[in-house]
Length: 609
Image (cartoon, rainbow, N blue to C red; front, side):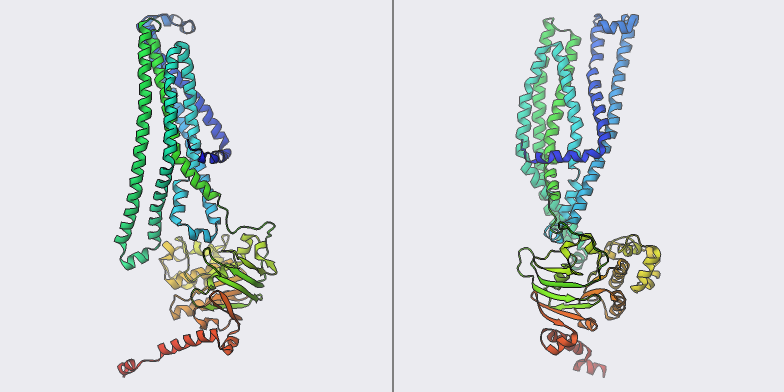
């Protein structure tokens, strides 16, 4: 059997530790179930040998029953009632076992999925940009039960093993030849399981990957539904999903056929063993070495022996699927986050907002010189404008501050401390971000604003909304602050979503603010409302404003001009205009475009006339 997955097995049982009381109860119930299973064939022996054949009872049973044991009808009633009692006991133990094991199974699955979800959030943005979200969802949701499934095979295997040993021992005591003959199938079962396991793992890995890809197609399509509808590509996406899923289904069918053939082989091996045992048992009865009742007990035991053997074989065979899932999930958990706390990192109290970039370099994987040798200083409370053409590195520059990515050279200082020496959580507490596309959850408006500070009161939420010029439109909604926003805030307009995100930033009250083109996708009237809110938000905070419209930078203390990842100019707007280079060209281009839009053409003038 392929031993690669077994390096994870020991780790699996650590998840059982918080539930050790339930595990102990499961072991006790399993042992009782195995013991009760040994009693099942004996009622049949009593009926055949001592009721029908009138053979004397064993001394222990005869003393226990007294004169009742001499009456055939009474003995028959006792045997039948005893059989019912054993069946009731077995089923009662199974009910208790199912309850205990289901609790263990569900809670271990919950613990493991929770750990995977938490770890996935701790991985860097760069990691998530390289991986499809649908595959992560598939691993957490569909493969997250692998540890529990492996652990829950232990009671099954343990009960089967105990039953196997007990029944073989009793069978050997009654007729050693039959017991030995029954064991002849074990090498064949062992070889079959080993062959199946060694040839199925690669195929299972492929099937699980294909099924994960199918979920990725669904997740990707639903996340860009507006684009699909806008371009009328519903049929195209359906065909893409259908093609991918058909491939996955075809491979799953092939796996299922192989699993079914494996089951057939195991059943045939045990059927051959049963036939051999039956022949030997009948021959022993003919020779007078066994009674009919004893033969029935031995046959029942041997059949019961093969049942746990089959269960063990099927369980080990089915575990291959779980082993592949374990391998995938533990590889995710073993992925070391690119962005993590450095040794000796310390928490920081509320920062003053003094920032220094010293020779900062950064490059995305597979690219070079995304940012090259960036150096500048920002004093507390200053407003920094960042401009440049698309792809110049503006968003990347500000993303380095909260360590969404780590610099590859140089350093960034916050209040004189290298940001890598500050605990990540503490560093990110110092920064609020308002993005070009406001990202909102599907909950209520109040819940989305409260996301800035989870312990905020309702009064503080209302105050933050007022500061963000959002209170009035919220109060005009039927459910006001309890209005459900829907997927990505679809229940309100783009400008209203932006004001909700600004209110969230107000509530967080961080000393450093990053504004990534927050007004680029709204009309001029809405822009004025948002800029008014942003002016209040920026007051007293060190602010970085990535701007597409240069008119928003009139009050900036410093303007940084980026070009192809390099800082080519920095200074006030007046200084950069006087310099007459890159910023002046951008400024003149925007001013000229604005004048062109404002001046009517000859045709328009004629139409007006």
